Image 1 (cartoon, rainbow, N blue to C red):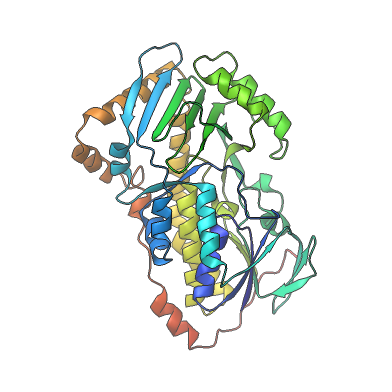
Image 2: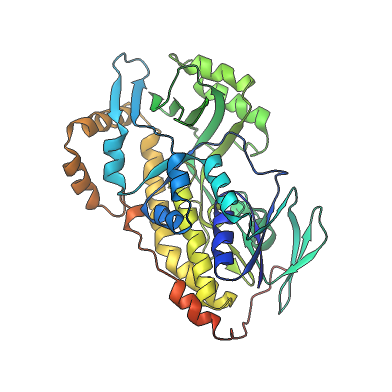
Length: 422
């Protein structure tokens, strides 16, 4: 069974790995001319995602690339006192098994794990999809048209596949009131295991590096009273917006803003949540941020994407490749995790970028408390809230091996599919 996946970042290669594992023939198409190494930012893998990467045989490589960030230093605008936080104590409460890793490093590990079993097509993208009873005819921007049994969009928040099949993304996006920017810069502060965070009402900036990195990353998060309407590819305008949002702040902020002129890698987007009633139509479905992004930097979207890819491949295998049964089971199995991630992201977006002086003060007090409350008590309190900080560790993964073997010995039943996007 031939399955086309659009997107070679995180969800795409993980999905391709498990599809190949179950005997499908995956092809991954990626718009970028080469595997992306554009700086990236730090992402988190929590226990269910860590269990999946261990089953993929790449756990040791991922652990070797962890950032090693152990300390947070919070400095509030107008206050001289620093607040130091031991991040190991915080993560001990959040997850029993966790790694922070640079996104590009994670993507490279997943690509390496699939090179021998997956066909990759770089420097191309899907321009049209036409489905009939037996498959999907795919037109590409560069390559010759090809036919696949299924098509899966793993191409991020601004998914091309979702646009082609479900329409304008504005029908599904819900802005959470803030924006995020990340850039690469020299590690002029000599950081290795530390995140320095500079806070003010409505705006937070941070700079960090990692034990495997020669450079550093700066992160900007800020609120605006209304959506700005900045296109996600208009880099010049994005940098203007960041400069305006952080103008007038002291400490390291002027140096960070100056680096905008010469950064080799820059990312900017709204902190937006994607809400769809269904991620599937006919022989097409979505995975990761393309289908259910809880919001960049606030909802654990990387762990959710890894779990989503694993579940999608497993349910397709258990359904013998039948997209009706497989896609329905995938959405049913993942639905609660997605809904809870949305709620968590809404709360996190409110907390990470304080709306007023009191919220900024409360954030500082919470940071201080982490260092003084016994770790066992922090974890005990966290475990009482599986919908909050322990959200990810509350997810139980199914082992699809037996169901996939059973399905492989049977003939998939015919499916009646919705082809309304053609």
